[in-house]
Image (cartoon, rainbow, N blue to C red; front, side, top):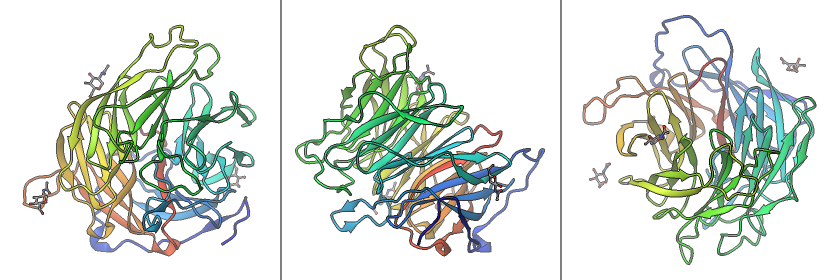
Length: 425
Ligand SMILES: *[C@@H]1O[C@H](CO)[C@@H](O)[C@H](O)[C@H]1NC(C)=O
Ligand SMILES: *[C@@H]1O[C@H](CO)[C@@H](O)[C@H](O)[C@H]1NC(C)=O
Ligand SMILES: *[C@@H]1O[C@H](CO)[C@@H](O)[C@H](O)[C@H]1NC(C)=O
């Protein structure tokens, strides 16, 4: 399939089966602004963002496809091209204000879209995609405070980070520093793009909540390098430049996948070898202090939570108001809910059976939107009092299982982000 940069293809979704849809009655005043959900179709023949309408009751409809202006790439596994987790990453699509950023793993570029607030499914490229300086970009971070966009790569010859300054007036993206910064931890560097994973690949890039440091996770190879790494770069408060990276190897972590902050001193890291862990972030200098060339913070294990019978827990979402963490497993439709205070398992939200597995997720208006391993999206009400398998109250229930098989080949679908209108989470 070919797309011209400006064209959007409007598609009609196969409607979710009536049985799977239980609409919630909506009290209160209607939202005054529109909301939309986005994921990436990382497609070697031409990538696109799929934008869905979020109705007032939280249900999804009307997928709209917009070309990213670049091409995707499907990571390799021991069994050939990845069938579901094609980028081995979290945060392949991020939204902040009316900006949407995504990466093109095949053409090695970064795409920046502007979202129309009145019709957030309408995405317009702010400019031509820009080269990211490395191969197989798979995750992106944006700080509105710093006006900085950073891209993580995991193709040959080594993983690395490249940052750009965003000019908010012109939307120009200017490369920062001296080009891509290699992350030298990986014991056996990738020799080709697409890389072979999920072990031995970089996974997630993000800023901490106060944007005093940039973080990047890298999985170990499980063999001669059993522990993975978290790299931290201090942000110089004077000019926003990044200082040299510090490498942490939190004890007991092997395949650091997603990283999600709870607050400036605590985060959750998922690890498909066992589940998830809470980690502490130890700033080595006062936040906002003179850290011109100071070291980045250290990341240390606080609590490791083994999830019984998990297949591969890779993605995570945090709810500040509920003090909960939602982690998803490529091998299960169910979402495990952790207590954000101590990392213990609080409950399990049963997902729709047909979902097969759960990938990138985002929380909005009390609904968790979960990319399925099947060709669809699960909408889970995290507060509803549904019944657990054994009849006990296990709060949370399926609101919708949206079948998107009408959109075609699923293997490249990755990422999940939302335009929130006026809602917080
Ligand atoms: C989408 O937004 C662009 C830029 O604001 C505008 O020119 C265009 O008419 C919009 N298209 C639709 C279908 O709303
Ligand atoms: C894990 O699997 C075993 C064997 O199938 C089963 O007995 C046990 O209840 C499962 N545990 C959980 C938490 O699902
Ligand atoms: C950050 O979150 C952790 C884990 O929930 C908690 O123990 C800690 O008190 C929090 N710190 C702050 C400063 O809120």
